Each structure stands twice: as structure tokens, then as C-alpha cells.
Length: 202
Image (cartoon, rainbow, N blue to C red; front, side, top):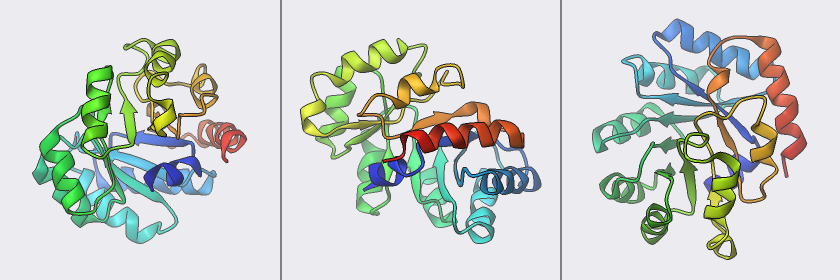
């Protein structure tokens, strides 16, 4: 299950990369500083090539593809070797295609109705997005309450940062958080995030 993989890592760096060399440098920095994971977003033309090369060079990394907005990009991500996909919203067509391809996929939600639709489609790990703008920890706890007995898990993303990351990770139903602040090769920042993540690994 994807939630089990996320539980082992806790902080998934969210990367917006403009070229292959930049992407590989960031991935190398993440690995060497104790945080071997990445959600490489399909917001740039370089995303597919970075994923394809990074999974070869850094097999120890748990690499996913973010901002999957259509079925075409879903297949591009899977073909490039991504281990999972993430979207900002819930698109039934993409979720259905991911299930058909046995490709782990995390749709985005921020309302009870979206949670129920995603669960009905078979998704039990969901991206809470945009986390801070949608109400942060208080909102997430309120959303979890009616569904926690069903085993649902969340990956809050959007506005999560060093100042509030532990507030999210302290919630039992949070499998991991998306770390947009880890988009650069800053070794000290990455190491600090890795130390925080270790405190919450199950």
C-alpha cells in the first residue's frame, strides 16, 4: 500500500524542476542528506526526463510524479518509472485509469464530498490540498473525524513548512506531508527535514 511507503519517509519533497541537470543535483542532495524521496511535478517540460533518469541513478529513491492533470501525463509518469502519482484535485477518469494500470495514485481533496467520492473510487490515501489555505491542521482534523474509523490516510501539501510540519506529522492519520520548501539543493535544510521525519517514522 502506498500509505505504508509514505509512513517510512514522512516528508516527501515536492520538486518543480526546469532541467535534467538541476533535477539530478536535487535528487543527489536529497539522497546524500537522508531524505531519499521526491514528488517531481509535471509543471515543467523537464519532469518526465528527470523522473526517467533519476529512477536509474537513484534506485533507492521513492520517486513519484505530481500535478497529474490528465490521463496522458499519468501514462507518461508511469512509463518514465514513477512509483506513484499525485494530483491537486479528484478526477474520476484519472483515478480509474490509474487503478486499471495498477499505478499508485493520490488524488487531492479538501471537502467531505471529495473525500467520499475518492473513497468510493477506491482511494484510501488522499492529498489534502491546499493544506494551509484550506484551514490547516484544524481543518484537516475536522475532515478526518467522520472517516478515521475507515482507515483513511492523508498527505497534506501546500503551505507546509518547517514551522508547522510537526503539527501535521503528529496527526496519526497523516501518512506523510508534501514538502515544497525542499525544492533546492540546500543540504542543511534537507538534513533538518530528514531529522524531523525520523521522529515520526513508524
